[in-house]
Length: 147
Image 1 (tube, one colour):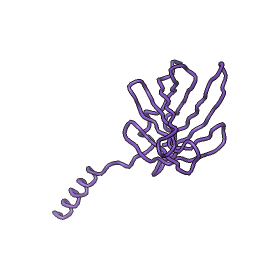
Image 2 (cartoon, rainbow, N blue to C red):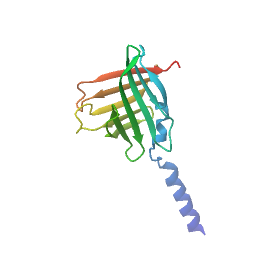
Image 3 (cartoon, rainbow, N blue to C red):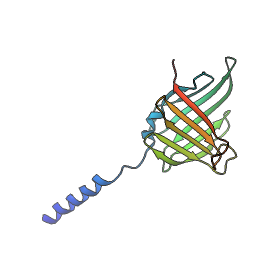
Image 4 (cartoon, rainbow, N blue to C red):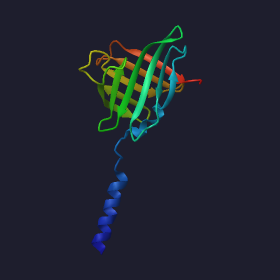
């Protein structure tokens, strides 16, 4: 009986110190409608659907859509960002880094972008696309949509 109590105690200590495996649910900060300050670019992300996030982006010019992209973050180890620019795809970008307020996806085999990164900011959300070496970077700063 004493051995059983010690084993239970040790098992409990191990479980308490173990970090939970990361899941897509921890990306809830990405959910919602985001737009750039002048309203010419917008991204909308769903709430988690069993670990899956679905999104789309539109670029607006003269009050019409000049470009669109669909996106899907599939849960896994690692999570995978799937891009469908103009509905063509998917192009997979496996997760390469994550904190509680940021996530980076990378596909060094893709022409451009090779890196897609999101992070929360005081104003809302920031995204960056770039080549693997950080060159050709394009930054997108978002705030919550007014609608």
